[in-house]
Amino acid sequence: MTFAATVLTLYPEMFPGPLGISLAGRARDEGKWSLDTVQIRDFAIDKHKTVDDTPAGGGAGMVLRVDVLAAAIDHARAAHPDCPVIAMTPRGRPLTQARVRALAAGPGVTILCGRFEGFDERIFEGRQVEEVSIGDIVLSGGEPAALMLLDACIRLLPGVMGAPSSGSEESFENGLLEYPHYTRPQEWEGRTIPEVLRSGDHAKIAAWRKAQSEVDTRSRRPDLWERHEGARVQSASGARREKKD
Ligand code: SAH
Image (cartoon, rainbow, N blue to C red; front, side, top):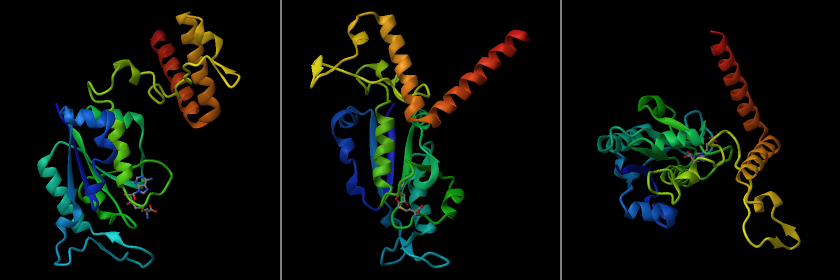
C-alpha cells in the first residue's frame, strides 16, 4: 500500500525538499509513499488570485480566506477521501509519536500549510480539519512543519527503516527518552565509553540502558516522566484490582 501524502501550500516548490533524499527519497522511488502538492492559489476566486484578506477586528498581517481554503481541501479530499486533513498551526494539539504512528498506519495524510497570520478559524469545523502543532515555537509558514510530520510518518512505513527493531526502543515509544549511544573510538579526548557496554553481558547492558533511560527522562523531561509514572501506577493498580475480582 502506498502512503498518500498531499500538501496544500502556497509554496509547492518547497516539496519534496529534504524528503527527496536519503531514506524518504528512496522510499518514494520505491513507491512506499507518494506526494501530491496542491497550490492553494489555484483555488482563488477573483481575477487577482487573492488568497488572503485583512483580519476581522483589525490588527497586523493577513488571514487565509476560508472559501479559498475550503475549495482547495475539497479538491484534495476528492482525490483521497480516506485521508485525515491536518492543518499545521501553533494553536493545534502538540504532535506526538503516538499520533505519528497512527497516521503512518493509515492510508495517508492531507496537510494544510498556513502563511501570514494563519487560517480563518471557520475552516476547522467547517471542513473537519484537525489542528496540529509541532511545538511551542512560531514558524513563518506551515511547510517546514509539514515536512517534519511527513518525515516522522515515512520512516515508520513498512520496509522503510533498515532494521525493523530500531523503531520500538526509541525515544517516546515507551513514554521515555532513549538511552545514550556510543561508538568507536573507545577513548576520545580522555572520555571513555561506559564499561558495561563493553562487557558483552546482554542482561547487564539492557538493565543499564533501562536505568539510563529512566534517569535521563526524569532529569531532562519531568513532564514525560510524570506521565510515564502516572501510567505505570495506574496500570499496576488496575492489575491489583483485576487480581481481587
Ligand atoms: N499568528 C499565528 C502564527 C502564524 S505563523 C499564531 O500566533 O498562532 C504562520 C503559519 O506557520 C501558521 O499558519 C502555521 O501553518 C505555521 N506554523 C507556525 N508555527 C507553527 C507550529 N508551531 N506548528 C505548526 N505550524 C506552525
